[in-house]
Amino acid sequence: MKDPAITRTLRTGWILLALSLPLGVTLEALHAFKSQAYLFGGVRHEMWRLAHAHGTLLGILLLVFAALAEAHVAPEKRAAIARDLCTGAILMPLGFFLGGLLNSEGDPSLGIALVPLGALFLLVALVRAAGK
Image (tube, rainbow, N blue to C red; front, side):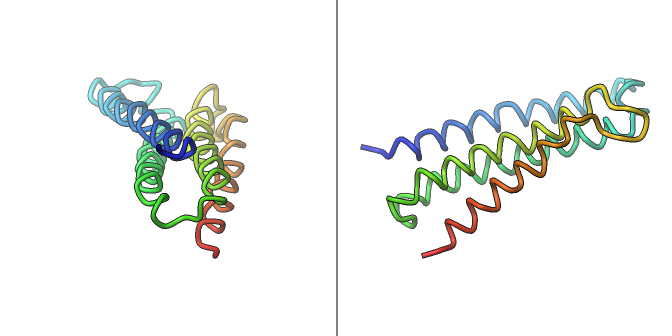
């Protein structure tokens, strides 16, 4: 039977991809239809592009971890690494997306604070995975 942590990581990776890829298509549509709120909101434009890119890439990272963890990560470390990877992979793109909502003229909104927190979770997970 598969490890529940790996199953959760796999599911989270697929969900991240299922959300991030349509976000990219939506951003392209906003660009194609010359949406003023998107095109002339420089911070919003950048934050939402970063949300799409990070969500997609981190979703792929979760799928790779799920594929390799059973063979290459010690069983006693899998749950903690999977939890930290999933938490970071959700917080980082969510922070970028929220940073583009209700932002002021030149600064992202307070949601951007989730980005460094997510990065910290990811860094801890990667260091744990690299350790013996």
